Structures are given as C-alpha cells and as structure tokens.
Length: 220
Length: 189
Image (cartoon, rainbow over all chains, first blue to last red; front, side, top):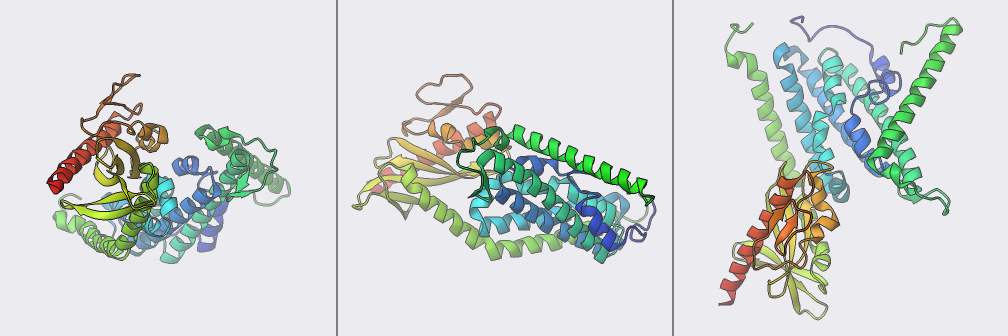
C-alpha cells in the first residue's frame, strides 16, 4: 500500500454520481447492503426512511473521511471509518427516535445496524479515502440515489403485491388477494432476486446493443 | 512501521476523532433527549388503556424513588397500575411497561417500549402472543422461563432461539413487580 493514500486520482465527480445510480448500483450491481434491503423493504414508508438514513450516514462519513484523508494511517483507517460511521448512525437513530417515533419503533435495530452496512464502509475505502471532498460528496449522493432506487423498486413490488397499497394508499382493486408471502421474509428474497435478474438482463442487453452499434461498450 | 513513533503518534487521529465525535453525540443528546423522553411518555400514556382493563388514562405518581402510572377509569376510580421498568437484554437495554390490577395481585398486561434484540429471534418479545402470556399471572410469585411446550402457572414459555431475551424480560418483570408491591405496601402503612 502506498504511504500517501491522501493522493491519487479516480473517476471524476460526475462520473462517480452517475455510476452510483445504475452502473455501480450498490444493491443490484455490487450486492452490498443486502441486510436492510431484505429486512425493511415490505413497505415504501420504511424503505424510504431507511434510504434517507443511509444517505445521511453515507454523505456524512464520506465528507469526514475525505477531509481527513491526508492524515489516515493505512493500518488504522478501518478503525477511523467505523468510528465515523457509528457516530453518524447514532445521530440518525436519535433523530428518528425524536421526530419519527413510530417509524423508529418499527425499524428497531435496523437503524443501528447501518453501522455494519457494507455500502458505507466500501465508499469510504474506495472513494472518500482517496479523492477530494467534492468527489466524495458526489459519490455519496450517487450511491445513495442508487440505494434509494433499489429500495423503492423492491418495496413497490412487495407493498403492492403484499398489501395492495403504495405508501399506505390503496392502489390495487378491492378484489386483490393480498399475497402475504410478499410481506414475509421469503417475499424479500423473491422480489430482490427477480429484480436483480431483470436489471442485469437489461444492462447486458444495452451493453450488447451499444457494442453492436460500434460504440464503446459499457463494462458490466 | 511499528517502531516509527509511539502509540500516540500512530493513533492520535483516532483519539482526537473519538473526542470530537463524543462531544458531537453529547450535543445531539442534549438537543434531542427531552423530545425522545416525551415521545416515550406519550407512548406510555397511550398504552395504559391496553395494559389495564377498564382504564381510560394514566396519571403519573411517584412511589418510592420511581414514577408509576395510576390507571383510572372514566369516573376516576383506580383500576390498576402501569409500571415502567427496564434492564439489560441480550443486545441492549430492554424497556417495558407492566400492567397490574388495582390491588397489585395480578399482572394484566405487558408492553415492550424499547428493545434492540436480534431481529427474527429476540425481537419476537414484542409479539402480542408472547407478551400476552404475562397477562393473568399472579404478581405474588416470581415467574420463571421454561423451554417446554407447556408451562406451569408461573412459567413463561421462552421465545424459540431467544432464551436470554425471554429470561431478561421475565427478570425485569419479577424485579419491578416485587419492588412495586413492597413500595405500595410501605406507602399504605
């Protein structure tokens, strides 16, 4: 490992931002952060609260880690990442307990569990510890949008099929027989697996199409 | 690398950050602590009618060194008590509300105010079915936890795979109910 992990260059801010949304989507492409993805995606409300909390923690941690990147000692960097992440998670947890009490009770231990969400520590390691504050912020926003997109798609499928509602509003016809399995843990695996398959299939089809058109193929 | 400077030179950043983050969290607690407590209080008062049959509201009272809630019906008669109680669980602190009848002879209900037990195992202490086991038990005798399919009059069936969480809740209930009965007895003499 090089001694100056504070330097180095990587993708530009805009590229980081765009990559996070689909090409390097944390859930569908990197398969990170699967615990909250499976656990709290049975309603849009809890999925979006989780996405918001993760976005706050990711942005905060990326900014702090990027600001102190010149001071990081290689063998102590993971300790610093974890300390930073835990602080932002605790702030998010207390904020939810104060202003969204019901939701805080519903999410229970999944908010403190953001500390061990691999998306965040991966972004600290891959981007924030090496790139400028601006790039780290763009990266955090891109990855957060990607995570929110994944949570929204999975929660939409599960809530629609399982409760017949979206954000708690009745959407499906009254005759819709709620598929209870979609609310329960197996539904999380079914929805995630099928959606991940679909996203990768579409990405592969696009890549093949643009390669056929003579353009530069997007790498998977 | 290890002989380059002492531990302080190696780890000063971790120490400084820990100090800064600690101060930031203390500030967050000062800013939000009161609001979080008032949310819990609101939750407690909402639970009173569910924990004590016939109760319409709870009135805070101090007994000994603790706050308890006197559950009253619509004509203002005391129909029971709600005790806030807490203790260590498997993962973190568990906070409970325990409903008792007016004479503190029988447990009338149990509610989990806060817990961070293992999802899928320990967090099933929140299930109404499991909590419901406590209703109707005698408050005179200590409850114990059993793993058997059928429990005795003073036995609570453990949540499968979460014996420690089950035992923690039962211990908290035993302790709080025992102390409340003693305090109530002392205050009536």
